Length: 213
Image 1 (cartoon, rainbow, N blue to C red):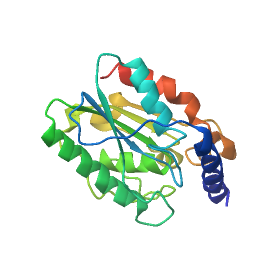
Image 2: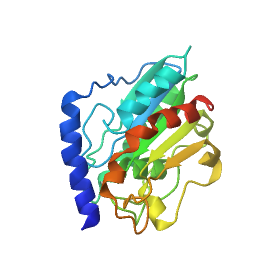
Image 3: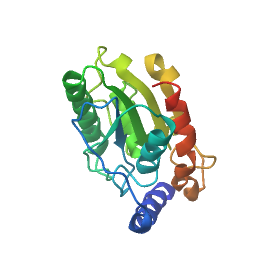
Image 4: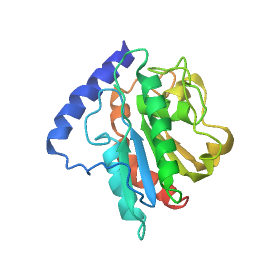
């Protein structure tokens, strides 16, 4: 019940915030220096996601100067269906593979919030099966593309409630925010509002990525 309330609150708060928040324009297929690939949270509105994706993209552009940026909103339902995260997983991997082939010098920053963190986890080989709105892995980024992923930025990551985290080759390039009491990423968490506050971490996430790009 608490998880359903949290997701419902995200939908309501997100809908209200989207009215007043200016969001960046997402673009894809340009051969920029850095492509920011963002998977939004469940029911989250916004260009890349108004709680995390949009503010993180803006913060990255402020923090990292002298480089060109593009952005891609992972194309998936971001709803409560059993296949939602799997669809996002497949789309993220497909997009990065296409971009990597078309733009040999391009690097990637992967951003995932809530269910979107499940999407990113799966795409880098960490299964989100069993987590809130998670799924088994259906696609992973190939070894040839892995060095071009500069940073992985995760927020309210549901696998953390299972005691899991990003390990392996991506671990040193990953920052994973879980607010105290967030019931989506913290087992036993009871603060629904904590799951909606990750905009406050956008600058810290951008600073981390700036050290990796």
